[in-house]
Image (tube, rainbow, N blue to C red; front, top):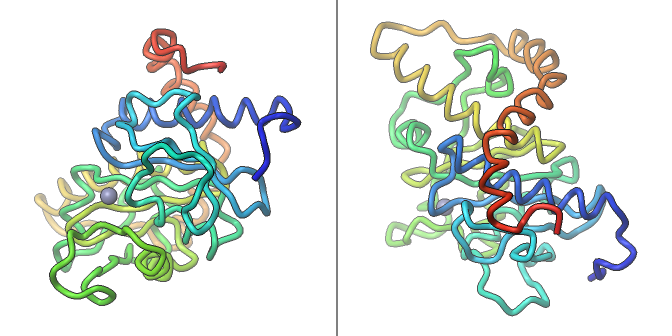
Length: 250
Ligand SMILES: [Zn+2]
């Protein structure tokens, strides 16, 4: 595992962005005391950065730990129990640079009913390719688990459910959102929750008209150029909390 020495300024920027990502996802009600966000250390590397076991709203740069794809680290501080979610998605998906695992409130109901989560908003075109798959932990580990993904084996099964997609739900638990950049993964996690709210409201009113896969792909290309705009305003909202934590810029 590489040391910070020699990583250069982009390494420091990546760590700063991961701290900001934690704060944004809390501010946007995607993460609470639980859930986590990670980033691959560099394209093609079999390692990722993730906070030690800590509420995301408290994460600073000093809390970030580098893990390998077995979920191991040289850092002896307590890790997140579900770091295998991140490890096994990075292993299966070389294109994925960031992973968000959340329990966001409006997404979870779609994991326990027959109605799939689907794109109803142009801002969530990344959900339009298919009905969002649901990971059923009973298929891998039987009917008496705590529903947590606490091993490489369970991480592999979840990564298989995600396949080549952008989002997968976890029955009775939460979801994962992935992307080719940290900022895009944050965007997708936020808009997965926004879309779930809109879809739930639409279902209460009548039968929704969902985006076609083609509309989703076109909308996703357009919105892909706008991720920085969302990141900018979300970042501004959490700047005050970062100033008080001593976590930014370290
Ligand atoms: Zn979880």
